[in-house]
Amino acid sequence: MKAIKKITRRVSEPFERIRKIDAIEVSNAIQGAGLNALTKFASSDIPDQLKMRKQMEHLLYEGSKVGFGFMAKQLSSGGSQGELSPEQIARKKKGLFDLSLSDEQKMVRESLRAFSKEVIAPAAHDADHDHQTPSEILDQLSELGIMYYAIPEAFGGMSDGEDAESTVTQMLSLEDLGFGDFSIGATAFSSVSVANVINRYGSREQKKTYLPQFLSDSPLKATMATIDSKGESNPYKLKSQVKKTGSLLVLTGEKSLVIGAKDAEVFVVSAIYQGKPDLFLVDANAQNIKIKADPAMGLKPAATCTVQFNGVRLLDSDRLPNLDYQQFIDLSHMAVCALACGVGDAVLDYVIPYVNDREAFGEPISHRQSVAFMVSDLAIELESMRMLNWRATSRAQSGANFHREAHLAYVLTCEKAMKIGVDAVQLLGGHGYTKEHPVERWYRDLRALPMMHGSLCL
Image (cartoon, rainbow, N blue to C red):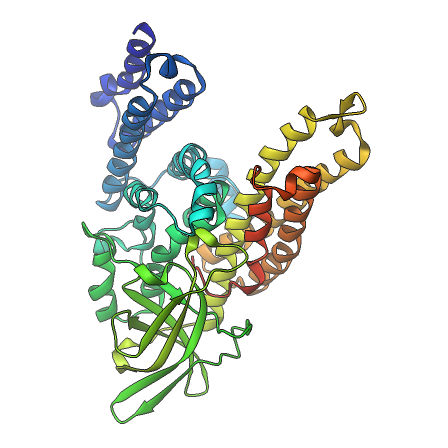
């Protein structure tokens, strides 16, 4: 009981300074104390001895969630977004590539990385087996507030409007979700992606209609339907078509690898309209839509489906009128790159202890140059992926042209992420082929990268 009282006292300490610090500092203090206590408590054997592990973890998680939610509300109501240091201001004035994060971004990273490690990662194996992401995880992630960064302040969110000043924060969030699991992270971010698309490219009426629903008590469930079926993966040569018939638009086509399609209420569908690619908002309950499960080699917790649009009737108001299709594809590529970087972090965290602990011929296998070099290459490739994607995201947030950077990041990530998956399996030898270890799941998920055009969007 002394240990529990000590932990409780540590969690309560920040509240004693409430009158001396502002609202953002309060939430940071609460969040930091909660996460610190959660980490220390989970690593001890006291909860098991007292048979209180689940109760205490739930208590600490709720405290962390409340702290983050409090911060989100303060920021959305005009609170401080985090001041830049003199060094950051100087670098920005010189136009230099700045990798430093604000205090709020650091806190978001700590929160999501801890949640991914403590909640998502342990659930990933069963989610892969069951072909479904647990609804409680999606509910908890929703309560943690990642949707706020996709919604403008005018609708209760934290984004600065159409320029999407929260682009970097969302990219960092995707990295941390990917650390827990690629597929669960993609599932959790699917509705956020749709909100981003509506915020960037939608009309005023579309924003008024849809964006508030994402922050309601029963958040709108939406997903992207952008990958043509039959193995077609070129986002610029779509098979799906929208044709004008009188005052109506008629959508025909088939989309594959649609994340969480059976639970979705709204689809964002890509199709050729008047000779060029376009995006449309489609009610999932509209007539002439057929959804069927279509499990793939990976992405199993994402519950991917094939969706057929057999002459679905739309209105002109369902088209996203301000679309920059090239920008949309680039932002989509950056999103999946971020997820892949998170998986790469998880791979490194897993294989390094493994090669140090596993012995062959009387010594750890990490003493072999072939193994040590493979791990080193994995780390180098991961950092190169991350740096290119961070650069592209930084340029996107600043309003600069980022097409070249996004394309380079995507090409490199598609190549190196799959190599990371292959090498992770190889480093574990025969164990890497079994479901006892997560590397085979990471390999299967990373193989999907070259096909995921438009599946997610920053």
